[in-house]
Amino acid sequence: MNPFRVHTGVVAPMDRENVDTDAIIPKQFLKSIRKAGFGPNLFDGWRYLDVGEPGQDPASRRPNPDFVLNQPRYQGASILLARKNFGCGSSREHAPWALEQYGFRALIAPSFADIFFNNCFKNGLLPIVLPEAQVSRLFDEVAAFVGYQLTIDLERQVIVKPDGGEIAFDIEPFRKYCLLGGYDDVALTLRHADKIRAFEAERLLAKPWLANRL
Picture 1: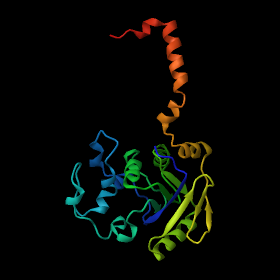
Picture 2: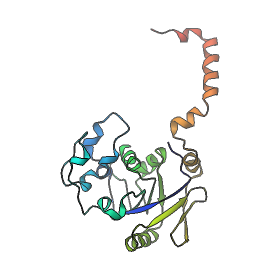
Picture 3: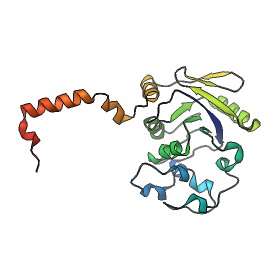
Picture 4: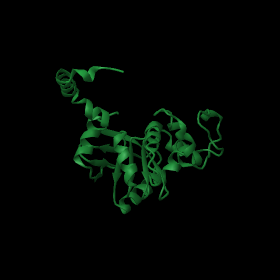
């Protein structure tokens, strides 16, 4: 996955509480056996006025002009501002896949559902928890200024506002290490590839019959 160090992006406000994973990526799109292609169907039931199906050309769809991500001022947004309990519902990992493939790199909310929160880190998304009052102030600022941007500095663990003000946030050290290095679970394992190969070679010398194939 892509490392996360410093990111500056337009902020899109998702002004709803308890946004569940079926809203993030509806169930009909979970049929795919691939890990790619979910971005066009992020928030599908809210983004479009017609019902979408897997493989459908987005250009043939009818966008909902009232939905936040369809509004011109939020085009290209890469930071999602949300309300409490974002990502609740089923534990589908497709939800962070869809957010990341749409173009989001970070999410800011007062709270996240636990499984969704964990899945974000495994897929290169940075979920930031801030006090509810602070999140509400950010909603007000996003509404007041077209093209409102934030800079997220993971190394320093701060969010830098347009006026230069900084908001500190907490993150577990190991999760921070993985995001900075771009390490998912597979990449973490492959750091020890030489030791794994050495172990396998020694095991085959001691137990050569393990090399037999049926």
